[in-house]
Image (cartoon, rainbow, N blue to C red; front, side):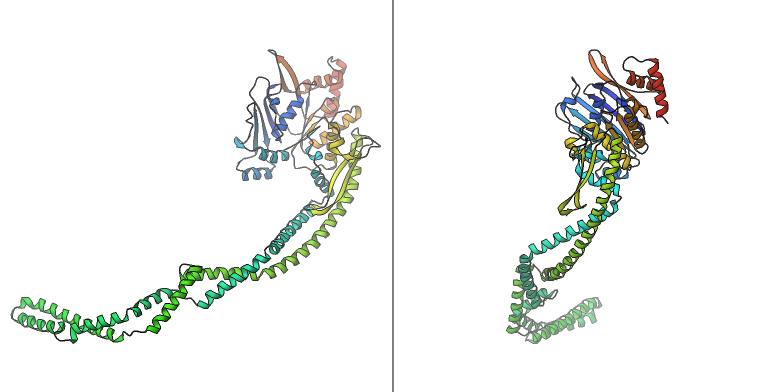
Length: 553
């Protein structure tokens, strides 16, 4: 609910702070005192278009701030949190207008967009007047009102879910058909690539092994010659090093028997001789194994050429080629399964279409029945609210194609006078008629997720017993939602839980507006003024007191 409203430099308002209570609040005062300006200020908080003409003469900026209690509105809290605006149980909205054109929106102290404000504001306040009956002037809301009256919101939500799923399935089918030719080309390419790689029978680490074997085979002659020559020089030929080394070792060993200090040297030379002997034998065996094999070398060269061609196409290494093949095989499986997918989607599409048809027919039947009952209920309420002979016609028009909420659109047509053809509300209803029609709807459809309702001009063109009935009906709505009402009728004002007096003052050559919350005595005088005019008599005061006493019951 709206708890506080602050207005600065808007039209003739200099600075105004208003605290609102739960229940029914009426704003009264002389014509031209500034009551409509307050409604305009609330409109700014709702995201209405702003004009520099609203800025008070001589000022550069106008500011409107509204504080809301949103403790019972978890959806608003969640929406604001998703938008980056943390909040508790209070929501502060600020709108500033400047002559330079820098108009800003603030939510809980943070700079926000006008789009966010216009998104959340209709969930906080609805204004019903000449140009502000958001619910009634937008035909898209009429279907929601009818469904709420029929009690079929759950059925409509189920229809919406099926509709969304069907749209998704059809989109997938369309995508399959559009990509069919490209898919065939893709299948041919991927199949060829997968088969080419598969025929190569690649193995992890194969390339490195082949390159090593290639190097050995290409150098076989050199390896054999050099290792054989090394063996000959060490062991096998005349003057071989090992023979000389053996004689040196024997000589030093003989000397070490005479001079024991040479024992370690003799042992070292003997150990070196044995190591060289082992190396010579190894070289001999290695040389005997080396065999030049041109055929084997050619096979390796051919295999490496094959790997090279594959690497140019599919990856820089065998591992990358195998990874690429795994990827295209997965894609091939997906593409080969397209027919299975198509068949499955077509079957699902058929089932969903049939289910949507059944649900849509069920919705249509329920709406047609509810429209007849709602028509009589609304007309009965409208007739009580000084709209004798008014016709309210909830019409259903079949759609060429179903939408997310059914097979038809709904619009409330209205005729205020007998003999006139019912027409769309926005073309024919006056501000007072719209307000009273919304009041009638609130009697028939009391539940609402909007916590604050503002009625402007609801008493236009009525009086007597009808005005008292309007007051009672407003009081009835205010038992469930906060209601703010601008009225000139004492019969309406006496039903208020809170009465605010709007006054126009002239000080220092400037006109300004102030607002006062009235106590019981002040309310009595204000109601008496509304009854009798500028000259308040004792009789008017007694009458006002009686009306207030009766209105509070």
